[in-house]
Length: 295
Image (cartoon, rainbow, N blue to C red; front, side, top):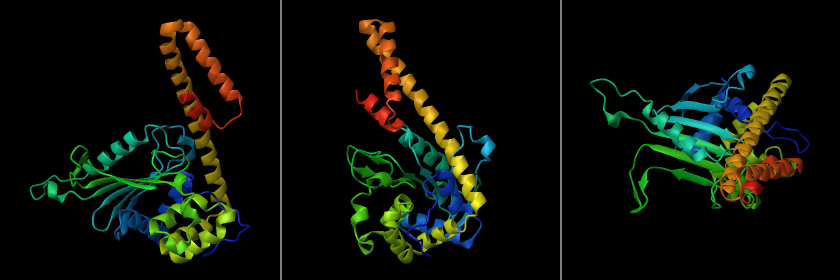
């Protein structure tokens, strides 16, 4: 399964496209999901059940909707996988919340069950467009531990993150020198980059799970692609709207703080004007927020 250098491909980093690729009721889709999860948790797993909670497009404005893939492996592990196109500053707290929910949602009621019957739970987040943690590490695995004495609790819940924005050096490596996890990360980030198409095809040839995901992508109908583009556009617009609201709220807070010294109203007006000037600059909203918060 190869893609031509001139072929236009839909971006798998759109969370709804990502979910569609890995939750179709086909052997290829199931194989791709099993391959991805196995690579990231570093042992072979076979996905046997998926909770597909894709919302209809008319419900997109429900801010509680999450385009995640909640699944269960053959050995009982509970796994939640999601693509976060534009992760927000509260992402770590949100991931911790959902990892906890995934773990405690297991049923251990009954006379014959105990805490030892709890299965491992993995919250996996692929952070697409923005550097999130300050280091240059692409893959992080978080668990409960004592930070003072560096002692792990050896519990059964994990949070795994992949930052696609940190792949600039990895993409320069030969495919054979990349790890399986790096193969997946490069595939996600550079799939639509025609200049990297040859390397993507090399990765597809050496990774069965990625080859299966590519086959699912190639099988999308024209109607499905148009649908995914539409829903991605609407979700992006809503995300941008929320970012604008958050920025205005932040401006009001900073204005109130400065106003304690220079006059509340004068401080608020100054912050409002600064935000207006930044919004009129035509810069991407993410850059505007970064410049404003750096002040």
